Amino acid sequence: MSAPVLFSRSCRAVFTGFLALALLAPAQASQPDPRVRELIAQLDLRQADTPSREHPRWQSPRHVVVFRASADRLATLRELVPKARIEAASDDAAQRRRQLARADVVIGGCSAANFADAPSLRWYQAMSVGVENCVAVPGLADRGLVLTNMQRTSSPPIAEHAIAMTMALARGLPTYGRAQQAGQWERGAFGNARELGGRTLLVVGLGGIGTEVARRADGLGMRVIATRNSGRLGPDFVAKVGLPDELLALAAEADVVVNAAPLTPATTDLFDAEFFNTMKPGGYFINIARGRSVVQDDLIAALRSGQLGGAGLDVTDPEPLPAGHPLWAMPNVIITPHVAGNSDRDDERFWLLINENLRRYVAGEALLNVVDIERGY
Image (cartoon, rainbow, N blue to C red; front, side, top):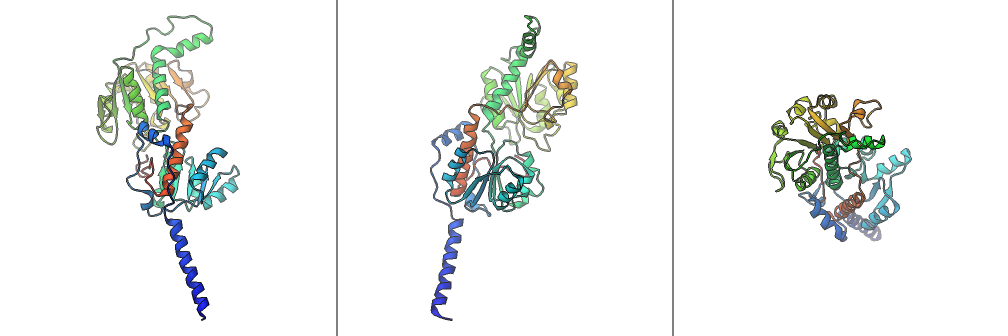
């Protein structure tokens, strides 16, 4: 074999090796948006214990598929990963499957189909706080991919929604609203409104949303107690933090209960007749987490009997609530159609986190909001 041929093959081998290393090596890190540091501090966003580059399947992204992104959002993402192909998920199902088949990164909603159609997936950024539809995908934990979510980005508006429902029930606003629509001036339609100061609010699930609920309730002069899985530590404005097995004991102290827990096997049907009967008579139940955490027939029975004075429900089971369902007509119930996370500022926080996580992933840095797939949140 001639020397030129040997040289040519050697050069190709060296070039191929350098190319492989270039694809695997972290890209030059771009600078984070100045607003990110404030966002992390404000919402106490948690980063992974280890950098992305140490994950066994990490590599700099080559093909990123993004759901629900405007042209401007895509342009920003492309600036963060100029060497990767970044495209919006197609509305055409067949074309979208072809896109996902090539993708190593997906930014989208939790869907079993998305995971099934993306065999080369390495990192999935969920566009939601709750990821029960993601972690329920069979075999997901065995695929060795990284899952991140939008935890805490919607905490401020969801917490305000929970407090708004509590205050509306305590002041009789649903009753007066109906009187207004009927053109009636009825000062005694509701009876005695309740003051919230000095009363006890129980937050079930002292995570991102629960902490923001507790902060606002404390600001109203309420005594706040809570449960959390990770231990008994909590912020100064929470008087007592109990473990999940202490839930009923804490419920017995509660004038208001706010469900802020993620949906897991342990929290499914958590709020049942025993729970409602343990609460103080006439208390309020607020659900801004997941409808399947509640045994709905037991909730209705507690409302009808007067054991519960009212309920504020942003989530139900099923969604949407069917026409003619008893909850629609109950005078002491407020129902909103799973909109607690909506606000004029939420979208900005949402995309700040997505952009920052993509920047970190490209640079091989530790990601924010990494989900424990086995635990479910």
